[in-house]
Amino acid sequence: MSNLRNNVRLIGHVGNEPEMKVINKDRKLAKFSIATTDNYKNAKGEWEKETQWHNLVAWGPIATRVEKILSKGTEVAIEGKLIHRNYEDAKGGKHYVSEIQVSDITVIRAKK
Image 1 (cartoon, rainbow, N blue to C red):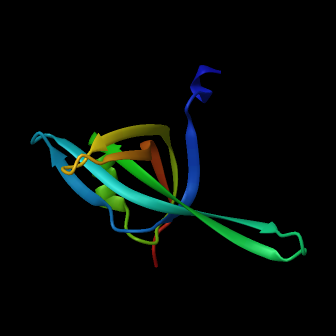
Image 2 (cartoon, rainbow, N blue to C red; image 1 turned 45 degrees about the horizontal axis):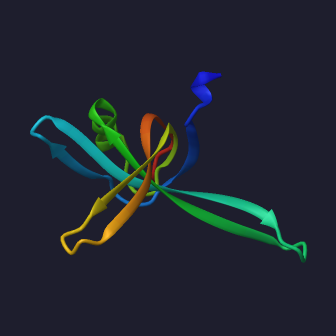
């Protein structure tokens, strides 16, 4: 059961072109987001849609794969872990970030 700890699996559509960076001249980083949509009936019995946006990061070989196969609108399945970090901006303001660090990605349907 240890592999269930901090394990995130999502299926959704890529919301933007992946942002690619190279850190320390040798580590590749990809940042992108996906949207997941749930359908449910409200108290009146009417169908509603709720969309959630998820920020994702991928490192190394996974980042290279993201760069090659993903574009806005592509439907993907991802697996990874939830990470939280914080930082201080130039004005001294503290910011908190939650994102999913991708460990595996599969294209379900390429953008048309």
